[in-house]
Length: 158
Image (cartoon, rainbow, N blue to C red):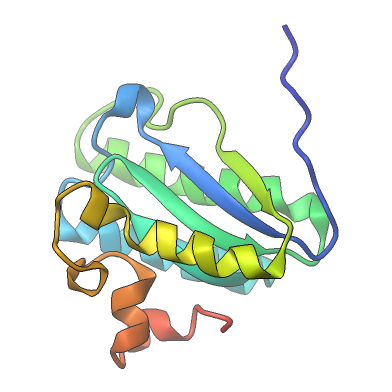
């Protein structure tokens, strides 16, 4: 059965979700989270997308991005996910798929909904009982927006 075509709308924002295969952990150490953030930076520089929020959970990732060229959304996520898989499999002496299926993308159609979506993404660690407040979590955009962190602040387009 063929896959359903991805909805692509010019100048839309996308809520991207990519999950570990069989819900396995994809971040085992702090260096793993840092590597994924560096890959976000690399591909943001390469393809010029805007990023509004992210949350790196132990077994999945949420990102809100906006692309100018509709044809690059797949290239961005293929590049990030493939690069991270190569890093992860090499580091942990694994083989095969790290990510479950292809990434999911949901169009954020209304401007007012983007704030709700950012709030939802940044509070994911609270709902998972990893922290009591979103800004306590080390690997989401809420924490980085609240501090002067050179590693990530330049990635955002607020």
